[in-house]
Length: 305
Image (tube, rainbow, N blue to C red):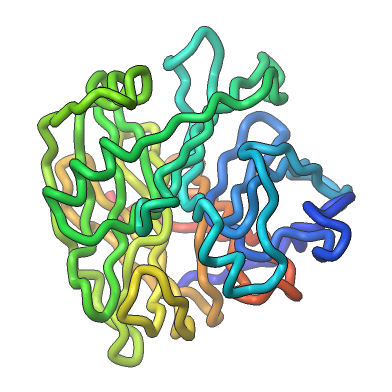
């Protein structure tokens, strides 16, 4: 069993609205760039920026225009449901962060590309990209869509489809990075890239299936992922979290490690740094309660190789 160590709550200097608590609650993706942690939340229009060290409060950077309702059900209906945050090192002249919507509803196709400077700070206003045509293509291939994670490994990108109790497809979707960049550069064009779908059975917690919630690459080409068992049969509706796990998929697509964690939290974002056989993890949680801040944890994982 993996032991989690709590580092801090994801508190903000100022919330996204005067009547919203000054914290991120529904953290859904995590990327570390130098001293900075960038975090997306699935119920916000902003990107959070936090220092890894210390307890200073984070800042919000707007990614999408408009305002979301404050009432929970109305907010759920209108939110872009950003579930993925990933680093694209060579898409533009400088490193860029890409935030992706889940695609689970028609208003959840939006993405935002955020350029960074050499120090890892946000360099310019985000570029908005509407990925409706690409997501429609994916839906034609796999059915109901719920993209929750992504990892770039050499010349490929892996998108991670989250299943649920009813929609059993829990899978990686691999396509070439060159094709994915074509999608980002010309999102209005119909394009059907070659994709390879690999389904995974991650087991169950209390008869609820573990399903992907995030992923990040290791330097050797393996992928570390998080998975949670959420008691729901719908990609839209939340359910009780029965627990979470952390695993590794090797570069040939085999599931080589899967371990549960020592507390019942919904892990939704992961960063990993491998040193020898030890993998140091940073993890963020979704509290599923706007009153409660998301937490940042550390953990260590032994590589099975």
